[in-house]
Image (cartoon, rainbow, N blue to C red):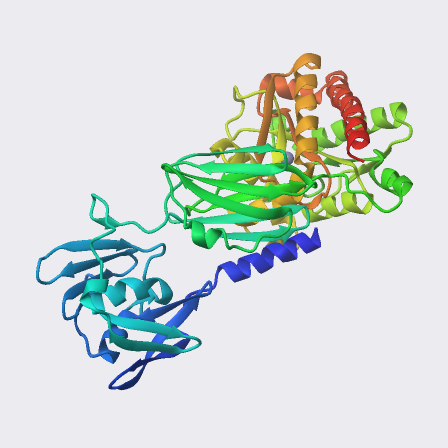
Length: 519
Ligand SMILES: [Zn+2]
């Protein structure tokens, strides 16, 4: 858990670098050398286009109010707008225009427009009619004239007058503990995608986008990805990843707020040690961790008649534990708390990991603000970035317990990207968590008087820490009259615990079968 959280912090600290002018580059022309300001962001060098015009003695008009600059080259005008990915080039003689779309926008600060250096060389060369050479680390050389015949500015534009560059511009592949993370950089929202896996090839098709295949096919792969081949097929792009034998499942998802796509490729859960017996012992289904939500100074939700969530959770947890102890004598039960005491969220996962748990069950109760209210029934949650409004609000409520903790800063805001990485650490267990969640849901449906509301996903901190298949149960609404009566009744709670135990019995068989098949 601690490693994961440090990791989240590292990620956050690298993600929130505020752009600042750092250095300069020298623009070298026939007439001399002039330094112009640049800054670097995510390995991309941006430079001030106004300073570039001054350094090259090109006339320009800078509209500070509208944050637009127009460079007046001999034959072309180049118009660039701050915080915008489009460059407009107009041929002076004909008035014909071409619009370049860059994969990234320009920046604006200190009353200057900064444009990405390498990506801008081609359009500036064409508008300028001179060759530009960027020689690392700090030199931009303005070379000889490009013969006019070689500037084919209007050849490759489409009907809209847009010189479309590629939508998918790159790919990062990185290896993680439980799999491989691929980030697909796109400057256009990808309207739909689908994936399939067959004979060691994971195929993902992105609809209605094109990719810079020459660049992407040269990307260094790693982890579970042995090779990647990208093709533009009609209006779509097809990625074929050759994945290793350790491949188990994959997930494709949008990153909120950008057009980028994450693909996570997960390892198999059971990995062989050198000694077969030791491998089997390691994966034996021998410890179940039961986590009664809240406790002590944290009452959890308050239901009707001031019923406290923490009390219901604890009673249900202890009842479930008793059933396991009595009927599965070879399985050890570990409680994160067995009394009414406060336990930090991160410690709950730590306890589970230290005891080598094979299954983590966090027991909670649901509630609505309005009391009493109609909402009722049991939900089973998996750890995934919360997508629905409802899932987010439940996760917020359950996560709000950290206010009671000594160091709330420990839980940095789980942004989507971080969450994907964290839940990816869980993803090799996801198949198991999912199977168990489905078994629970069916048990609740058939063997309790409560309504089974199904399996859902949300971002619960408590599940982040446990490195094992894990679920969180919202066992009914204490804000609902019928549910709260059920949850308070010892007999009914026994029924609930028995339903959970029924799912554990099923899961144990399933788990053993999987282990036999995979080891
Ligand atoms: Zn709770």
